[in-house]
Length: 533
View 1 (cartoon, one colour):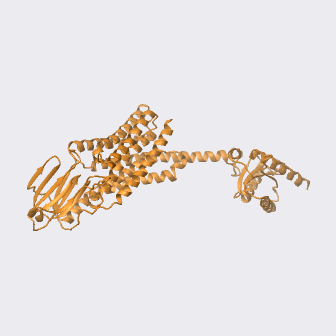
View 2: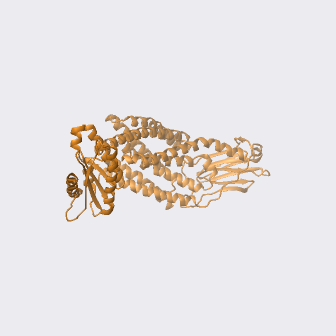
View 3: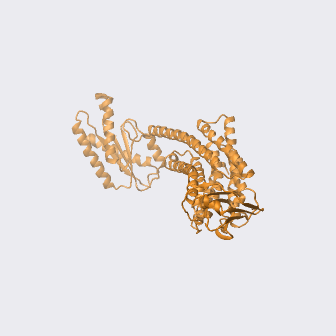
């Protein structure tokens, strides 16, 4: 199996997986989950004094004084990463968020919770429990203020991230639409849809991990599941984009890496559905697949630099990639060492990477469009008669090779009478004017019905399909009428065209040229008749 076939097949398999992921996401989104809090509006945000703390491997609890909470606004905002949350006022439960027990996740996800505190209570207990022992992915943030101020503060912190997510997703959608309707016609830029997919997935993930979405969207299961699917789906298009954009030929490395980054999502989702391990517990493998893809891209760049194949557009993308790679390493390091899941830094650099690569693709796209335009011009010059604007002999022969002949094909040939005499007596300029006039008449009468060619100095040919002989004779009669009107206006240099036609005969014709040869005989017979008059 060559690399091209392998790329096509595994890309098709990836598309099937992506469709399945979309279907599962829609099913997950349409599931019913209760909104976890009501929103009361008020005004201050402040830190709190923790009265007491209790921690074990799978649980954490905090005790707060109600009086202090009331003085600072009467509401508490609690951010949790995969904790079951229970809030007690003097021992009575006033709020809880528990794991969904769904096939899509057995966790509360990453969420913000805003809880209004009963004013007649003396203390608030915050109890958090976990089903797993992992040390990462278990952040807790507690703040105090009025409900409205907590809400607006979270929204303000999320605005930039939401805008960045929309920008990246917008870039992906624009690139894909531009590729479908413009670039693809040139049969180039096959890497564009892969990068567009990366941008859309990255944009959706950026929006889903914003604090506002974690606060406002009640279906936290969908946020959790779709967010993980976006991360899982990102590695494969990144690998294929790298191979195509940087023009790699190392098929063995590409094949092995492609298989790895496709298998990891399948395994992760399967383990989730079987209830063996959560998607979040498989995050190290998800991150590893993204890291593999990034390393592969760095390998591609280094290889292009060594071989002096680094184009201008590639150099533009390298700047964004370097920043992106450094930010990814920094974020993963802090994520697994100090348990920091702040994504703003990598998101900002991801956007830069997307913008730089978009600029690089735009440069390539412009070059592709210019090249395609030149190709079309050369093709027109190769297949178009410069003098008359009709298709030329090359185009006629190409049409003969590529056209399937059947009973619907008819060929009409025309030839200018006495053109040599006009050239000899009035000059070639008048002769050319007559040729152009004849071409205009032919195109007027037959241009919408068939393909018109100038196949020689004064010879013309029309290939027509699905026409009756009676209709064809009416068209020839119409041509004679226009010819007469022209001659009335140009008595000093009139034009006369001999015409002949033939329909496909399976017993005589094996090609369009065979039909034309029989039409030529009829045309020469018409020429003789016109000279005898």
